[in-house]
Structures are given as C-alpha cells and as structure tokens.
Image 1: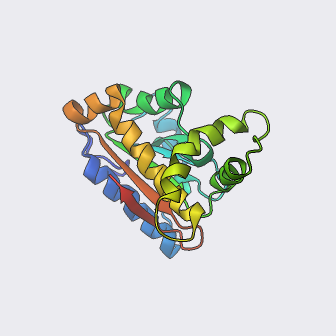
Image 2 (image 1 turned 90 degrees about the vertical axis):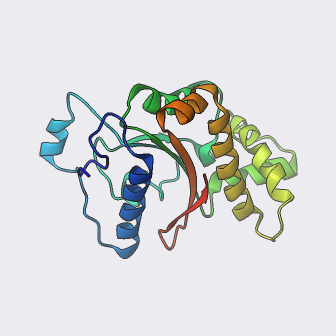
Image 3 (image 1 turned 180 degrees about the vertical axis):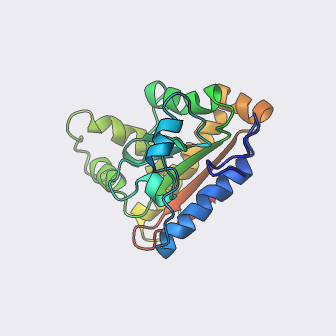
Length: 209
C-alpha cells in the first residue's frame, strides 16, 4: 500500500481505498492528524500527473471539508460539492463520472452527507411553506424533494436527520443506476458507498453501499 492510498496497480482496490478514508477519519476523530501529501514535495510530484484514489461527493458546508475529515492531501481525492449533495443530470453527474471514467486509480465513489445540514433545513422550509427559495437555490430544493418525500415516511421525529440519511441513500442509488457508473461497477471494480458525518463527533458512519 502506498501513501497515496492505493496499491499502485493499474486497477486500485476500492475496499482498500475505503479503508484508507476511514482510517483517516479515525485520526480526525482522535485529533491525531498526519496531514499526508501536504508538502512542497507532493505538490511538485503531482504537478504533471495525478492518480486520485477516490471520488468524494459531499455538501458545500464549510464544516465538512473532505480532505480534512478524511485526513488526506493534494492529489488524493476528486472532490465534488453541492448543497446537500444535490445531483443534476449534467454538470454534477458528469463531474462525478469524470474521475472513475478517466482514472483507473479512482475505484471508489463516496457520497458524504452530514448532521444538521443547512441546505436540507432550508429545503424543508421551502417545501412545507410553499414559498420558493430565492434565485437558483430553488433548483437545489427541487433536487431534494425526493429525499423529503422519503424522509416523511420514515419513523422518528427528526425530519432533518431523516432527510440527510435519505438523501445519501437516494444519491448512492442514483449513481449506481447511471449507465456509465453502472458499467464501471460491473466491469471495472468501481464501488459506490455513502456515509453520514457527525458535526460534533467528527465520525463518518457508513450508511449506504
């Protein structure tokens, strides 16, 4: 296993990549960060070529930066971020497809939702009030409606938390159903999983995959 988080073989092991992410998260939780691949030498090493070992699709929330949450560095991750992992059929999905389609090192897609998501809270308010969100923010609300509909059918009083989890699971399912990603799963060993991040604990919990 190399420090970059994969075996160095043309086809990386997604389970090993997932293990590297989760070990990094455990270091973050304990406050024992190693800050791998955050040196001048690493910057020069990857200036002409990159081999990221995972794609992370996460929320734009300033409290959940994937490279810190997973204790990784430059050249390790393709990172896509939208409000509450809102997924469209063009730019966002194409950006997620780009990593595993173009780089055999990237055999893992990790969808990362988080506790207390502001985008989800705002979407709930817009949906339940019937008052559209301002500007293009309404497009985010529209993208989150399926998660809202799933969440209101789930047991328990915390609608935000239920919707966070529903959104992660629905996003994982949508990615798996995407024709290009489905082909990469079937023929090229791609793994798609989802997790939920705790703002206070720092813990990433796997909830879909």
